[in-house]
Image (cartoon, rainbow, N blue to C red; front, side, top):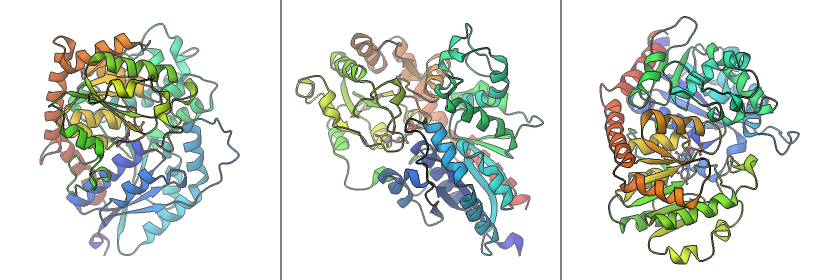
Length: 477
Ligand code: UDP
């Protein structure tokens, strides 16, 4: 009997921890609250230890299915990540369709939807080909970014030249004005393959039946108000966030909460409350060598305690996302720190290579600030834990997030374009203990922390939105 079979969802996570982590959280929440099971499809190129740890932590209701590897050796070695991800997805379409058809024919469960993140829009056809009825686009970024994507086809046609040369900021419904240079990095060079990829993805957004977005109204109320009303031709938007590791999931089985406890957490245990600034650039970010040096000296000069996740520097501006597929540092990062830095800051700062259990660090009471690249998962994790931010955006949509956080929400202070030790020190001090802008930022994140928690409670906005999504999936079948 059709309605008697338990509902199942297929989810496609394109490369990047920033896609996998929130989708895995969504799957966990669907299982815990609605008894909807899920299969997460993943790509071979991202079979890193970190990814394996996330997949290994999933509850039995969420299974994972690695897609067979595809040959990408013909892509130029400097092909941008966006082009690489999109190409891997395109070449995997037959396999994706095969898995979806299998799941759709399963007699024990009822496949109610296909959910993919934004780099998987080409798989819409595979889903339709496999007979899946409902297609959801999971947008792992902010409502601001989603708004930009929705307007991208018309902006691409109407903006002459490059975005960065626009004399006036771009004004979109409900959004903080976005200076052209802060529009997503892959859109900054029309001749680059990444530009074409992003535009093609954006053009397909409206083919989805539903948008599921990892954000919440309190953080961008005007963008939410602009997207909420149903509009013909635009899929309904459900804000399900914040979906982060550990937040609102019943299992508490996140990758970073397994024993043994990381040494940096033990170190944090010994620091006074709210005294440490956590410094990290996500799973993929790397600084230029001179930026790394200024950051080290700036942290030292700030006189604040710090916990810094270091990676070896990027060779040039084009490779600041060089660790995207693998968070491991390419070379010994300590070799790039200023001479004597580690000794001079002993006891005040701790430098760890490549990776730290970020959500636990942000949740720790000793953490009082986060110097971040402003990617969306890091941003949400900071807000959920009420940690004020210093914004140092690097690539992708990070500059857009930084504009929104610093100028719209007021949850961050953005570092100026030229990263000099004196300004780094001053901004770090202001965010941690300053009485001016810093105090306002600290008050704002405390407010957003509450709002995020309320949204995830019974009857809260995120919980009700998820209930609405599932009702559509199950009720209509
Ligand atoms: N992360 C972590 N430890 C690190 C770096 C990153 O646990 O040292 C986690 C972080 O908590 C977040 C994700 O990896 O959940 C990074 O996602 P985000 O969107 O912030 O950045 P990206 O890695 O995609 O640049």
